[in-house]
Length: 237
Image (cartoon, rainbow, N blue to C red):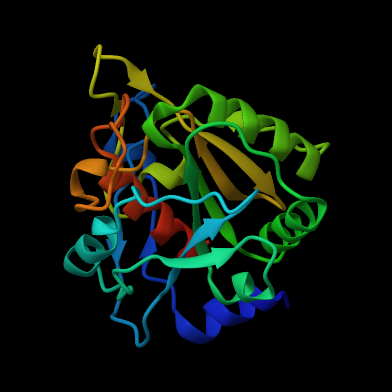
């Protein structure tokens, strides 16, 4: 079994399941409705990585507030502090969930690309979000992920996907500016989403603390709820 999958299974039992109600409980043609199902508490604490990549690029603006709220809304216990981990380091495989964000252009090294691919194939999960909705960062990420997975493109996810219904039932992601609806793109390996990309901010910078230098860009309003869903999906699928 893959290293990260072994770590997660040893630390965590499934916490949530999602399911559609029986067909008789909804009118014909109605969209699916998903209900989060809480399961018994677990023992252990999840740690999440804040990736350091490229030429020492990382983020000080991705709020870990969703990790604190997760303990309130679920039985998941998570370290509220994101841990800085180099993308090329073997230490990355100790973390089931990682954040990759920042602003401006960047280029990954060959070693970083290889480690990212191995991490995701072996059960890791990455949330990639453009800090301040940085278009140069989003373009750089799209270019890099195409080199990491040459035959597996990012695909926009429908809101019927279980990733939107693990802890919070999310049917829409709204940006803070302009009333625009945001969408997430996913990378799938062996039937499971292993990476989420957002060109809009999932950073929730208003709760990131005094060290945050980010302007916020056109962030997603319910980013905290979405990030909680993503972590719960990582641990239960």
